Image (cartoon, rainbow, N blue to C red):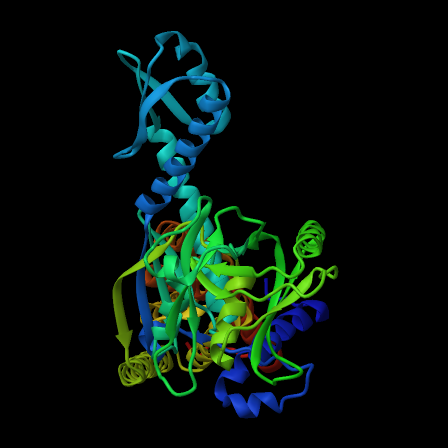
Length: 529
């Protein structure tokens, strides 16, 4: 048990050195870390919202709006199909969460379910009698759709937040329609709310040149068009003028074919613009549209607002273009972020907002440091008083236990929260339990008359099984906390699990190595324990 080959010693020393190098960057400022050589680690532990301050947003999916759009599509699809098949109907429209209509000829009922299955496969058509039909989503379909939309929205929220340069946002699901977003370090959430409040659904439409401004001002448009507004900025007015513009309802090209977008500057005017690039299919379609509509205005619409509507001067065959629209540098960058991250499948509404100031976070860190330091000092003092030299060995192991925790948190870029600090303090207190078990067993073996070498060897060997059993059960509890917990509970579970693994390593290997080296060098006749 006390024999260590050179390769075992090298591995233990290498592990200690590795985690020490990972933990060291936490002692230096960001500017100092930037001067480190490239081969040295520079990652640090990320502080959570409760430690460094930041913003908390609770977002809710506007599922009713999504459902209305889906039902509207079903109405349009049914109308087109029934007209094409000469099916007479009346009262086709949306009532509540269903599409309702009545057949004039009951004999046409045989085609209804096949039509609904073709237009909306995940919806059901119910015969209400007297030729009346109701088309709805089933409860299972609605639940599955909500969950799918929630997962998609979380991914897009994550991309949008990360695109702003914010580090380690915490994004979690709450129920089946809400998203919790915590952004440490962000004190002003207004820009973030603006980014998340936009669906960012971009489409390209031709402008109806036949619509007069007078008609548009009175809300009159030709068939197949709708009125949207384009902001015309003035250099002398702070508020933009909203100009009505008639765009054709047909979507010529969808923004989901975009593969990249970036904020840049116009070569001629030096004004901020947004460059974009389509995928292969989008580039081909974009080229065809611009070639066939030279001299016509082409509107770029984002969330039912016309960003710009330039005249097509010539065919654009490269699959890329530029969006100009009186942008500032920040607004151009925000639009590029929205386009790169993709459109939200459903609008999000901020229903709760909280901000944690940096002073409160600093107080939490200070309190956590004091608690950790006091806990370490008391534990080390206890071990030193009760076990003397062996207490020093335990204290060295305790120090490396803390190093392992900080190094692992830095390596995995984990977010440290206030409960996480509590987990560290608890772990440090529990870390010496293994040493106490070993040392008390050694004392018992010495009282039974064994030699120092035999007593120490028996103490480590017999206590090892107990140490493993106790720590494994606690580790299982930490894993369950991480799996079923959310937010700060997970932070507690992470630090607890890392601390448990570190304490097993330091007690079973590191402490045993130090005792073995001391025992072989001094050959004591009496063990100072």
